[in-house]
Image 1 (cartoon, helix red, strand yellow):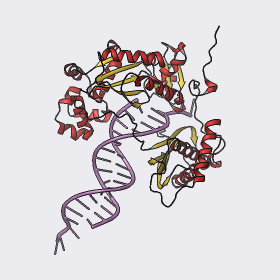
Image 2: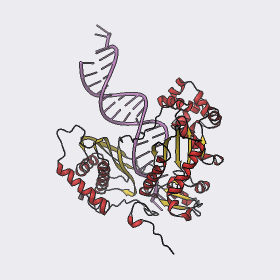
Image 3: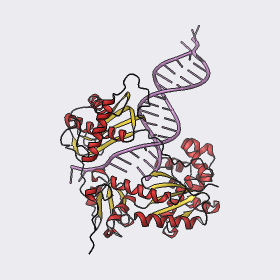
Image 4: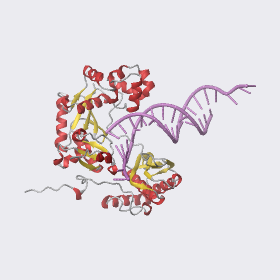
Amino acid sequence: MTVYGLIDCNSFYCSCQRAFEPRLKRLPVVVLSNNDGCAIARTKEAKNLGIKMGEPWHLVREQRKLAGVQWYSSNYPLYADMSRRVYQVLLEHAPRVEPYSIDEMFLDLTGLPGALTDHCEAMRVAVEQTTKIPTCVGWGPTKAIAKLANYIAKDRPEMEGLCDLTDEHVRNRFYRNLPVSEVWGIGRRLAARLDDTGIRTIAQFVNAPPAHIRKIAAIIGVRLQAELRGESCLQLSEVAAQRQGLACTRSFGRPVTSYSDMSETITGFAMRASEKLRAEKLDTAHVSVFIQTNRHKRDEEWYANQASLTCAPTSDTLALTAISRRLLRTIWKDGFRYAKAGVMLNDLAPAGTQNNLFDRPSEQDGALMEAIDSINHRFGRGTLKPLSAGIERSWKPRQNMLSPQFTTKWQEMMEVQTL
DNA sequence: TCTGGGGTCCTAGGACCC
DNA sequence: TCTGGGGTCCTAGGACCC
């Protein structure tokens, strides 16, 4: 019988910061979203201070929950690299590993010798020794059960970071006592609608007639029901599926009000997006641009709009920045204080494979883009850019507490002195 | 003054075709 | 007065995830 595992890094972003600053051990640590806007990762100690997931940081400050809290601006290059290291360790402990998110990976634990509990504990120890990242592991006959097991392992200290839900009786005992909202894929809306029909626990969900579940939660609900009964519907996939879309979007440090500033900003997003595209050797055939004002402001008129265009497959910076600016022109309205904007690329396909009989990019364009990418990689992002991207970005995000990129920048590597 | 930035999948409905 | 029945493709929007 197949056994699926799920390993999850505890307070991942915070743990990454701790990995390089041992003084943070046992202190409350919080990592903030872009713009230092809200709390997106908290250690146990920070949670105990009442700091909530997604809580606006300026409110936390006002409420003086800050005593002794160590807080950081998010440092994604560091976290992505740490995630890769965790993955490398896991490959030595499971025949197949499927990265699910930056801090979670599904594992194939089928047919491993010895007791699974011992195996999983050894795996956790190895990850922590090598990367300094603490984890929890849950496992069972399906992915949805493994996910639930992981939640239990994390939520209940007495489980000591491990939870085995392979046994049906053990599962049912938990099902009777856990709310259906803890199921992977049941969010706030669905939980509320299930609640309306009297379904509150996982046991009630699993035992409800599939036709009833189908009415409320469509095919997803029916599939989850089967998964929770132990019938596997979701397979493990080692090869990452080809991504379907790619976006560069930001909230601004301060509002953008002039067309020229917005045009520069959008150009910058289109540039970043086309770099990402080329890094993954993809072309896009569908470009969207959106702009919006601050929806949290009650006293300002709200405006949001988006425009998109189907184009010949390309990853060319000059083509994509030009299209993006053209799209912006169609949705721009004067007189608003814009708080957020973005460029999204869809209809992705491996570079050069889409039908493109009429508008084939020349080899020179490809060589130019390669040269730009290698210069920017060597001397830093933005060294070379189209003139339209502007010289200085007025909306540069706040990042007041950014830690060094310990593992991905030579200049920021940790220095060790021997006495 | 200050509220993230990515993604995924599914469904309904419209346009269009024969 | 009467106005089919099936497809496909695309898009927008909703819901969810981390």
